Image (tube, rainbow, N blue to C red; front, side, top):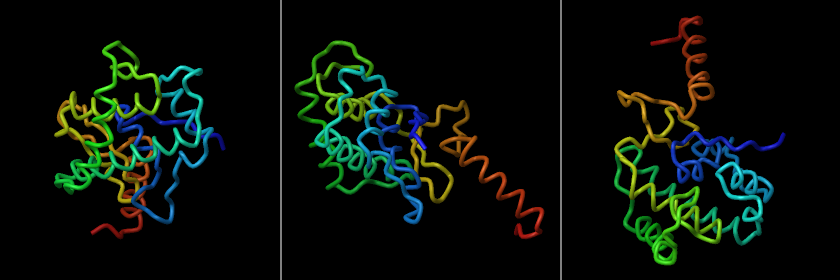
Length: 183
């Protein structure tokens, strides 16, 4: 089955960290960036031009490193915890050089960087710069682990996708009620 990127996090940096499916369930975890063509599909879906979306192992490894460092910080923030100092320092290292070298032209990512990996690292920086991280949430499904910005008016979004994890939770509750196993 061909990977189709789901850009549902509300920000490119969150869509990057969400390239690992079922992150919190080791028996089901899938790294969508394990295959180079999937990285290209994600970059194209994220707005990188086809001629810039040439994926090498180095680019994939850079994106995976950025994704994992960002997730370590953002997942803690999403549940109201403080990230470890070492992960914050790693995040700073990830974005500080690319911010200094970025040009101030507009691009799909808000700043101009010639390398798609740099553009994605800029997006991680822009998440911290521009967004209200008080609206950062982790999917309510115990195994999912996807992160998103809750842009709902009352801040009540619980699922990465109502059609995916939300439906599964509703079906589970219905099944439990029908079987009389709900507490």
